[in-house]
Length: 211
Ligand code: ADP
Image 1 (cartoon, protein in one colour):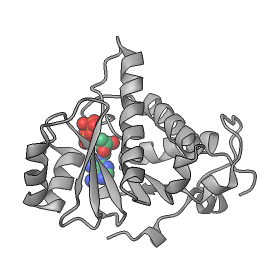
Image 2: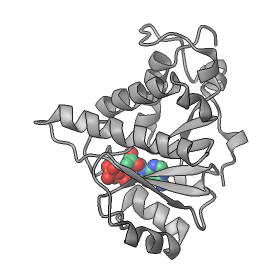
Image 3: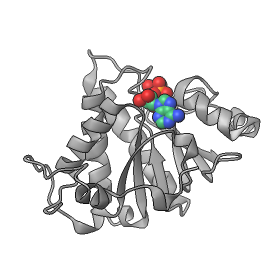
């Protein structure tokens, strides 16, 4: 189990030089954001937060990889709660309890299946499933949420393109009044490549002046 206190914020990651000062700043520095955003490499099913987000498919019935791992760790009651939800459209999200997971809830977000001939639609669907998840968290008075890299596995979204879309929508959300309702947004990456990419791009979307 990974407790919130053991998950570094990006302020801490700047201090340990895991994040460096970016040459390109896409947004201004906002100090409060540095304590609100985290990056963690590991297994999202172990994270003890108010909600973990599942990279679900439209049926909301368990599939493989992150979805399968979440259902395995949550136990059969999760699938039983998902069945009557009647699926979810691409870009949408629905919340359930977390059952045997350390997380209290699961927000099942449906990312797009990538198609290089229709990038604009895919970008807006990816942004929308992150934004819907964040809004569901706030509407349920949740304070801490962890995201996997939605759509970048089997759904084939190129990780770098996806990460720009994700960090842009999350940064814009953090800049709103509603964004202040959340204490922590954690990006959970699985591979070393994904971690390195998030480390680079986080410093562009959530810049800091000091290490
Ligand atoms: P999608 O179908 O939306 O592409 P996948 O489950 O195939 O979703 O993959 C999404 C991302 O989740 C990938 O980067 C994959 O490596 C990562 N992943 C797989 N298992 C886990 C896990 N237990 N915890 C966190 N991330 C995971």
